[in-house]
Every structure is written in C-alpha cells, then in structure tokens.
Image 1 (cartoon, rainbow, N blue to C red):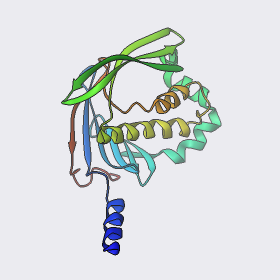
Image 2 (image 1 turned 45 degrees about the vertical axis):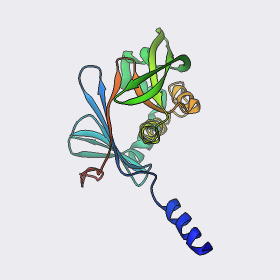
Image 3 (image 1 turned 135 degrees about the vertical axis):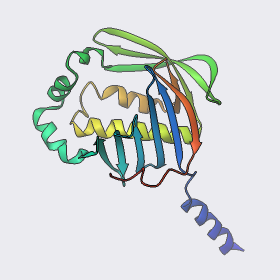
Image 4 (image 1 turned 90 degrees about the horizontal axis):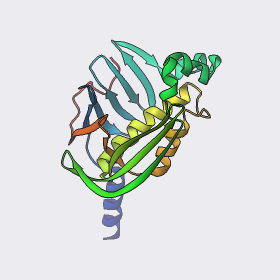
Length: 209
C-alpha cells in the first residue's frame, strides 16, 4: 500500500500543474497581445506573427520579421555602451514617461473581466513628468499568475540584458514582483484580458523560425 501511495505522490509531483495556456489581451488602439505558455522556461509573447519574444529552455530570443536575435549574445554590446545611455538612445524623449517608482492601493471592490473575478487596486506610477494613476484588476487564478510570471520574466531578462538591473528603470519591475498581487485582468484602458484558455498550443509556435 505504501509503495502505491509513494508512486501516486511522485506522479503528481512530476505532472505539470495544468496544460498549455493561451491568454489574449486587448490593448489600447486595437492591438492584441497573445501569451502562449507551456511552462516557465518555454513560452511565446507577441502582438503579431512577425514580431514576438520567445523563451526556449529558459533562454530569451526576439524574433522580428523572421530575424532571430539571441538576447544573451547582444548583452555585451549593450552593456559596453552603458545601460542608461542605451535606454536613453532607444527611448529618446519618452524616458520622461518611464516610471521610476510604482505603488498599489486596494480600492475595496472587485471586478469581473472576461469571466474572471479580481480585486481592484489603484496603481500609481511616478515619472519625471509627475504621477500617472490607473485602476489595476488582478486575479489569483493560477493559470493567469503563470502568464503574469512569463511576462515579468521577459521584462526581467530584457532589463538584465541591457545591464539595467541597478538602473532606476528597473525599480518598478522589482516593486511589482514584490507585491505578488497575482495575474493582471485589466490595467486602466491600456490592457484588458479577452480570453484565457487551455491549449493545446499549435505545433511550431514555441520554436525558432
């Protein structure tokens, strides 16, 4: 009897928590963001078929119109320039709108988005141009939390790649992770969950072109 219990426990530990997950978000302006999640080391994030980020076996790639960029390989070049210098050149005048500090305040109410119930917070992002406020709706659904972890991992690896781990631009990312609020259902009018479904993910989607 004991060996059967141990076998069952081992099987449960070895099994994934859930099958492939596909999340689709509507963005301001009409674009769609799609996250295809297999596990923490293998997923795809993108807005169209030609431009997306791909995590394969824990290594991040950017794909742009069929061209593959290995993020780890360009890290040295970017760091040689300097993180803040590189980001300033990339963002231009938009750096003044990049948050350097964020905070969350519960508003004491709940909201349902795409059939998922979540808690509503006020998110305050501080930039050199002042404060930006928006409602944030988050859920503790484990599938949505996995999708959120994938998005944060892409952001974290990108920040690390440009050598900006210690930069003021990296601080909001750490603050969001420390909050551990769950998966985003809605962020103001900028991002809203449209659907969250179990796969299967189509063959070839989580693979280099």
